[in-house]
Image (tube, rainbow, N blue to C red; front, side, top):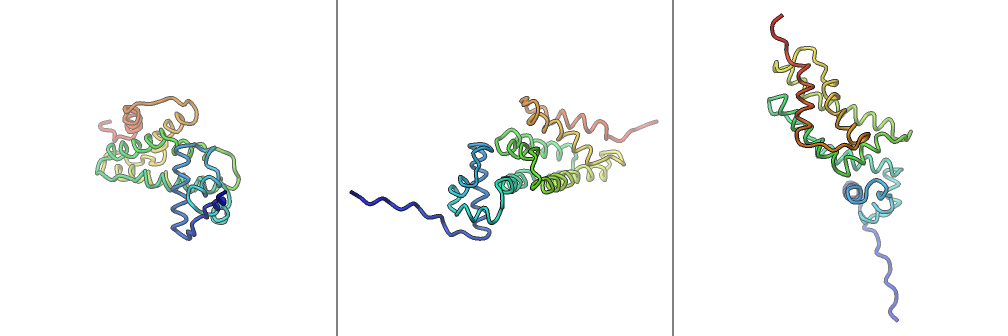
Amino acid sequence: MKPSQPAAQPLRRRGERMRQAVLAAAVDILATEGLAGATVAAVARSAGVHETSVYRRWKTRENLILDALTTELDAALPIPDTGDVREDLERFFGALASLLAGAQGQALLRLSVERDDTLDDRRRAYWTDRLERAAAMVERGVDRGELAPGTDPGLLIESVSGPLFARVLLSGTSWDDTLVPRLIALALDGARPRTGA
């Protein structure tokens, strides 16, 4: 009778190598198994690290998932600067719509609305920062004269992002490739410079 093989030992990853391995594993599991499947044990096993190492760094499962999803979102949503406000907005919100259509984006939005006192401040800061970064596209449009002086950049960004978030979180309604350009056209109509009296 052959002796049983010892269980494989987790790799001794530390620092940034460990962080990147764990975040990549979390994103993969979220994409394939959804929010429910992304347990700390499953992520640690997939990343080849000790579960205690994950808890030591992130404290909670929610912190880990938020870090994984927001890191992925930042990489997937660069702020374009094409020299044309409509083109910038269509590229940005087209990328956001693609992200929200997938498991990662949906998990991030669900996590964003779940009640958790340990996450509330971080979530608010995260979304505030991303909306401010996206508002730079509108500010550049105002500076170039494409949009009226006094246009509220945050409100314009929210007027396009809100319907996208609502479709994912509330109605679950699908959308086609024309949705983002139509939302942007509606938002920009109210922000165009007025000519004549």
